Image (cartoon, rainbow, N blue to C red; front, side):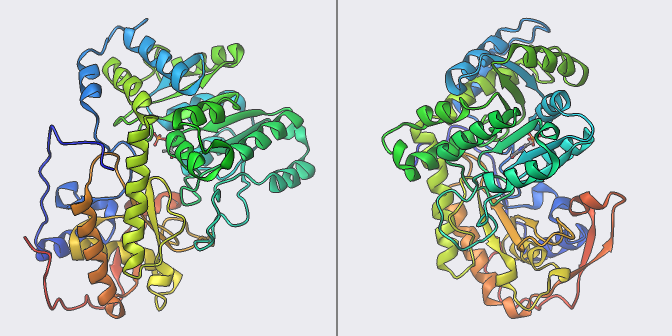
Length: 459
Ligand SMILES: *Cc1c(COP(=O)(O)O)cnc(C)c1O
């Protein structure tokens, strides 16, 4: 059930088909190079793209910009204590800043970090310490079809195999990412969290939860884990997070703000060490690279994130969007995550081989047909891995409504109708850093663009 009405609105505009074709060409067939002004429905990411509440805007005006001892920091501290159950907080400019502070403190050259799946920036920060990031997903995690409730879980079996091989002394850190962003945003059960806690104790490792989507994860637990059928999202969040020694958090996800992040812990010594590193990279530990007003808005956002009406509306909106796309015959990853719908583009365009990027072809056609922007997470973004050819349509929080999703579904239907005419793409210019090529590479379609017959989407 919808939990909001509008108080402020932002105009959006669908460029004509001709303008969209031109914009696509000028962007080198790479959605990251499109100007947002030319995008009608922007599903590139749910990170920092949501709408703040009137309470958050009010808090913003009351933000305290004191360099040290800011009252906004006190509000953040008490929100983190109430919502997440941790006493100490080190604010940072966003999630990766928190990763730098925490993983830079916990890891040294030659260490191994275990994670259900390292998110891109997590993997980069672990590697940046000279440590080795090893993923331990459960076996069904990358299967888009099985209907398991907790495909985001951490595989203790995989983790034990790694520890047997390298020895427990080389594994000082175990991370659990909830929800498991790089495994199609699938949730992690509380039962699995307890087992990971016990495992970390066995090998004497620090147990960190990457809590970016902790509220969405808690909602799934209330619906799918029998023990918590009568619990509130707020209760589950505290129970699940309470097993960790420390949290890393991006405020741009379940902090419901446009920028921000933090580390939280109850461990005094870890807190002191994190503060020292935070001063070096982020700022004095009561603002940590954020404006005081942004700290204040994040304090309010954290409390709103665990309100039942918010999180139910959020996750059910994404689920309904996924169901609508499935209904028109798109191969959608199931079950749907709490923040995005993932489409198997390899199955959508079976004639386009992986090295001609079926996912990127789908991204381009969704934009050309309806000004909809998604992102490719297959062979173009992750060369030399054998991931499925996924396209992600991420849903910004509290931003779009039923009519917007109707438009996306109509657009996808139009793409499906002409699927035989869609061609693959080739890369025509590559950036210097190959791992980041999907952000800036330019492509070209392999055959002439399909002739446009009817135009249902011009304004
Ligand atoms: C977004 C994200 C991060 C990094 O946070 P930023 O705010 O983008 O720097 C880390 N881990 C996970 C799981 C994320 O989704």
